Image (tube, rainbow, N blue to C red; front, side):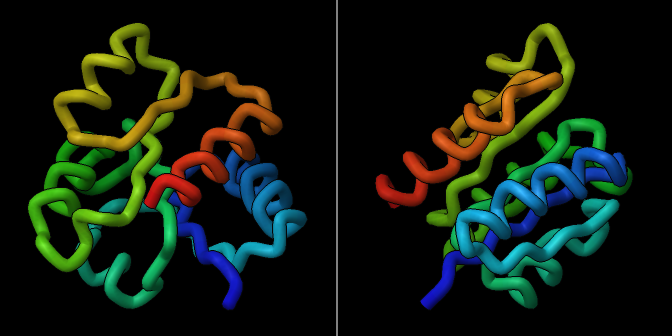
Length: 121
């Protein structure tokens, strides 16, 4: 069975490049430009991993991650918070994210991080 990733970002270029990376890894890619109805989005997508921008419209990355990590049947899904914020490590910790990635990021770094989190889950 193929892995699925849910990518939440309102930047079309980032969605495109991240989608290409994960499609090349044989993932099914689901994307969204907002974090509204985050629980419903994740339940519908049933991803193995989530990549979420901190500045995503709707709840924002921190609150959306907190909601997911506070939902028992979804809390085991690894979440990578990504942002250009200088305090990203603190934001990721506050959110309860499994990891974080500073923008701009190297696509190889994103690939390695995601695959390592999947192996650990």
